[in-house]
Image (tube, rainbow, N blue to C red):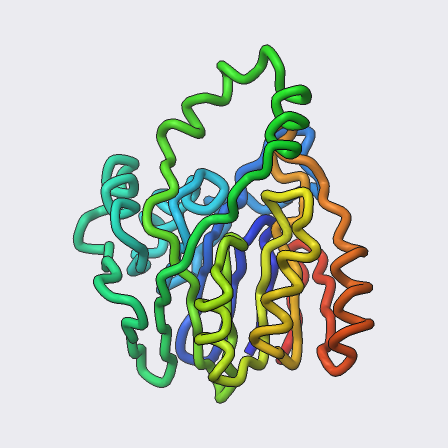
Length: 258
């Protein structure tokens, strides 16, 4: 199984039978870091697309990718409406109807769990407005046209490994404790959306006790709306409290094999 990070919360997982895309967002402006050399039109091989929620940095490129690859798209309530408005064919979209719903794909299993988006704290909001200032009007369509919709986390069973992806870190402790009852091999946890995100993300590690954790969404994907997140406090916290968890820091577009 090969796993590639696209930046933000976007991933590609390739196995012998399928190529899975999760929140595949590659579009960037000229100031984004790290640089994303791939364009949405470069993605040729995804046959299954899974969406965590409807914000632009998670679904903006899905219409073009789905059009080129013919991929089936799996998402939560209301996101299907956004996708069809942006050009995805209705017959390609599969909505999640219930918490814990399971989808089977010839040896691969995907299970959707209802989740929540991280709550932006006031200090983060103030700093963001100070950084964006008068340019806010330019970016309002990206915020207005891509509402969050129903938030999902996705658990995949691929080649005998359990991979759990969160697109945003707003999960309740009840949710995490319930998910932690099943062993997790690889945890994909986002570090974005709160000034205390290191502590918040660490709760995911504590609850799920993964063998491997891959932090993501820390990149400065769309400045000035975004900024680079220092993940070192999270890394140090995991090393101190969960020394048996392997921390993998991925480079953008670099593939790792599990």
